[in-house]
Length: 204
Image (cartoon, rainbow, N blue to C red; front, side):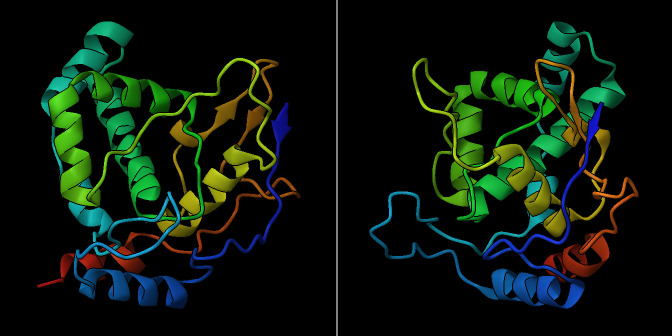
């Protein structure tokens, strides 16, 4: 069974088209990494990091561990690690969360956290803070917001068309496909690498 996404959905702070995305990226890439003031506990320390910088990060021990422990091929493990980095970029640069990872991304995130020093250094280098993993605790009420849908809309707005690694499957086997609209057609990407990444990579 496939559950489709409603479109459009405006999320504060998330670009909704290429022009908005390019403008946001230019602003982020040109900003400094000074800590922002604020009383909100979830304020982001800085927003000047570009996704291209995060994607350039390589950590082969994580890929090797996923191959060994999860039985994945090297190609698939590398793909999941790349999508995990995109997910952590959302967590580290957006105030619109909290976001929820898909199962493969969550598995890679768990494995990365086991390399405690490397994970801490990654978070602080790129985002200026430690990105905590907060699973739902027993007896905790369910979230009022559908975090999977929120995550997918935010990810699609930032990165364009998403791979199947971002699909969510619940305990009943219901598939939440990242790239389908309510009429079952493939959703058009609002902003892909051509709009944002090129500007990010040109930052001096």
